[in-house]
Image (cartoon, rainbow, N blue to C red):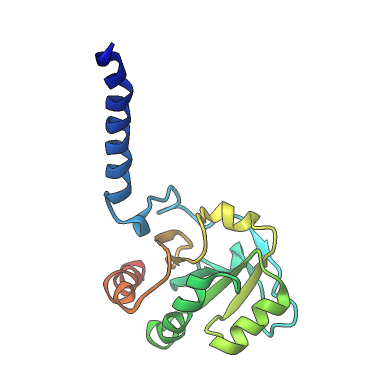
Amino acid sequence: MKLTALIPAGIFVVLAGFFLMAIFRGDPSRLPSALIGRAVPEFSLQPVDGLDRPGIATADFGHGKPVIVNVFASWCVPCREEHPVIVALKARAGVPIYGINYKDGAEPARRFLRELGDPFDRVGADTAGRVSIDWGVYGVPETYIVDGKGRIAYKQVGPLTPEIVEERILPALRAAE
């Protein structure tokens, strides 16, 4: 009778061990993307209403120069934290930075960029989130590097930090040139 009582406890311990290994294994910001090395998806996003920037479409990529794409939202706390890093990156990168405004309203997006700075050459409004799904977005913020041929070369999940820019973004950008 006592042995059968230990079986559920043993199963629990084994399952708990698997969950703990999954939680603490690897860097969650390095989630694999099936889109690395593939052309950017076919899409067209209208500009954010009232913002003096054009929207974004597939045709805006693949003109010989890499592009950084940042998926953000005004309601996203990590997006607010990373935004000064993106503003600083604009000055250093020497390439266009495009923004995809994810499931956000026009007024909050404009206020976000007015308050924190607008490093984007283009900003597309993805109000339904469908284009972001095509890009493979897990959640905001995410940053992509698209090479000069219009292929996704790198994906960063989560907010950018100065360390991530130095160790991952700038080297990936150089490799994409």
